[in-house]
Length: 355
Image (cartoon, rainbow, N blue to C red):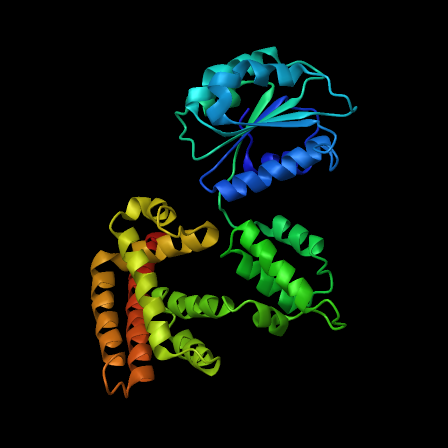
């Protein structure tokens, strides 16, 4: 059975006796392994491995030890309690063995947990688990945590004493991180504020999350790309006040608009293009950037990249005197252009509404 994201999260937290086998697959082996370890602990308990109720096999040994793997699913351990058999790094080459295992699973057998890397929809092993009634296939991706997951992770980290501004900032920041990255951020924040009596606020978060400065740069770039010139200057001077150099903003802007330019080359599939970048763009940020790329178009973005290159060269020269003004002017020109594009896009819609 193929589990949707919400059902998968529920099952991984409370894996009751619904499935005799589970396939976990995804592009990040660390995240897959983390989810496998958590799932196995919830299936057999924290003492399961010490009580020999866990047996693990690498998929490379499956050809020689296929019979042993099947026997372990049926074996009765010395210690009472649920059991699990793990097959790591499986591929379609193990599909026949897994099909035999699924066909013989019965109540009281060990739960079979299989991990794999990226599996396309046409994968024979993935299709096997999705079609089986006694098995589940769960894709583990690098999507940012949703609001419910963020709240759960904040509570698990012991950060219940959050100010409204602090909680809002963490929710916004989580949209640019994978769950493991965000969990590490919360652990650092919990250690930093463990003896603090006051509610945890934005200043505490900024002290342990230097990446928030880059999120602030994104605010400036979004204002420019979405046609909000009145917001560009206040946001950019806020960055200067935080110690951000014009050259750093220029470099970040060039990288950001190169991503938009790549997405604009295939506007119908802009989100897909952004998802394939390294590092990929995820969640709401990807959707927002895809809309910006489609609205600005390839030609405008090419011209903008040329201007940004000129600014970078000027900033690296021996006399970069108008550094702040040069960066601000480029982004302001883009914001005014984007604003005109947005206004023209609204006019036909308004005319159609009147008609």
